[in-house]
Image (tube, rainbow, N blue to C red; front, top):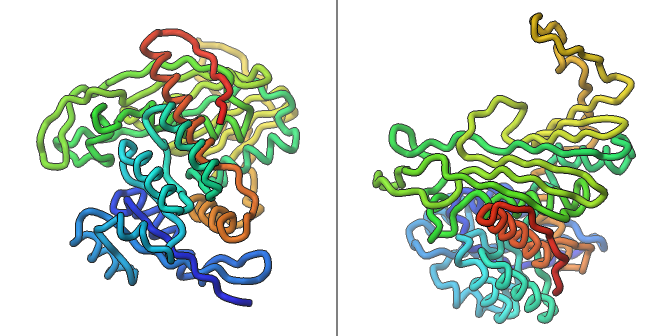
Amino acid sequence: MAERRLGLIMHGVTGRMGYNQHLVRSILAIRDQGGVVLSNGDRLVVDPIIVGRDREKMQRLAEKHGIQRWSTDLDAALANPDDTVFFDAGTTLMRAGLIEKALAAGKHVYCEKPTSDSLDIAVDLAKKARASGLKHGVVQDKLFLPGLMKLKMLRDSGFFGQILSVRGEFGYWVFEGDWQKAQRPSWNYRKADGGGIIIDMLCHWRYVLDNTFAPVKAVSCLGATHIPERVDEKGNRFQADTDDAAYATFELEGGIIAQVNSSWTTRVRRDDLVTFHVDGTHGSAVAGLHKCWTQHRVNTPKPVWNPDQPQTMNFFDDWEEVPDNWPAENGFKAQWEMFLKHVAEDAPWEFGLEAGAKGVQLAELGLQSWAERRWLDVPELQF
């Protein structure tokens, strides 16, 4: 068994997602476990260099986690032939330009989504990546959540019979920033900075619906700016000029109807921060990030509507939890390992920049649907 080094340029790792999920819980976890074992028994060892604009932040981050290499010069990092993969978790508006620059430098690329705020740019980026012959990928983290994996297992087993509908609820209350600090950065609420929950979350719902249930065929979406004024990180008040909630309905292949609410202005009274309720002719299921409960038609109770009497049935008692029959792996780390194997030995991979463009397409159609107040078909993209 031999060790193979893989040099990895990581940009945007000072943000919440880039730092927690990608740097600490994925790449550093892979480093600390000794790398990724390839099919021939070799071990792929990651050697990251973190890159950002703030010298003090980069140095402090490197020292805290024992990272040997850091830089504030992205061009110099991209020019190093010993580093073959570029990753970006920075801002949406910068992403397409950075990915294009990395491809031009001959780097394999992996990035967060959305890949752009423009479908034309996202499609062009996917075409350039295809033409380059380089490996490319987009994070599709929710597919690797135990709860969603259980839903897919139920679908593949035929548990649902014919799937009729999917109802998704995502979100939580993000504080305005005045009397309590906000949990999300203020740029999320400014259109000029690439903010808005539609561009952020419909990219997720595209790959979740396509891969867990059935391809999306049409969309109707209504956005809202429920909180018009917020307070930024420096204590300054500003006008929120983009959507903080989205109420979307999707028509899926096979006649399945999906409804997904996304909101940063809702208080949680459900099993998890995101839940999916799936109804089928033979059974139903409800899944969160990790847990999943089912109810088969033979276990379905027979309630009777009677508003004159208090409800005596506890409807939660009639659901059975799906067991954890496989070890729960961090979804981001699991997908990172798949992509690294794809780079190192051309292992199977289906989440290229084309998938990123599909997410941008649905978000763009969602915004158009809101503006025009109508249903829109989702055409097949050509790459």
